[in-house]
Length: 130
Image 1 (cartoon, rainbow, N blue to C red):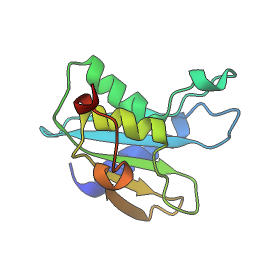
Image 2 (cartoon, helix red, strand yellow; image 1 turned 60 degrees about the vertical axis):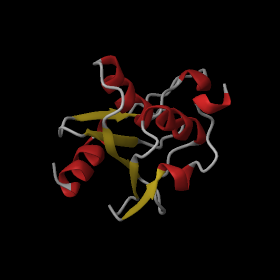
Image 3 (cartoon, helix red, strand yellow; image 1 turned 120 degrees about the horizontal axis):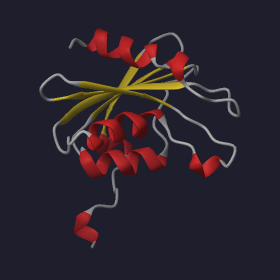
Image 4 (tube, rainbow, N blue to C red; image 1 turned 180 degrees about the horizontal axis):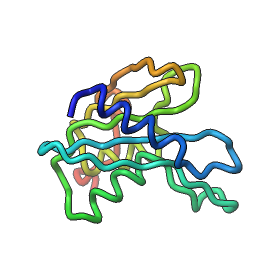
């Protein structure tokens, strides 16, 4: 899948977001090493902590299908002026399964800024702390 196709997959999820509280839709598209893509959107809940971010929705779908360590890149799309970057919880979640993941963040205009997981979460918690 090309970078542009992956970006389109993430952006296409914005319309599927369930965000009646924040009114801030987010879409994500996660690519595996073999080219398989898992998409997700944010799913809010009146009890805020129960909601799920787009990144964790996409990664959760992949993990529930048996994927574990072959994640290559994820695109996160939002309707913000700046790049739609993952929240801290998502950063920690993604580090668990993909510490080398490329994270491509889009703004409302489709402009991108790419990060490594190390840039987004330089001292993330992992198994070495246990």
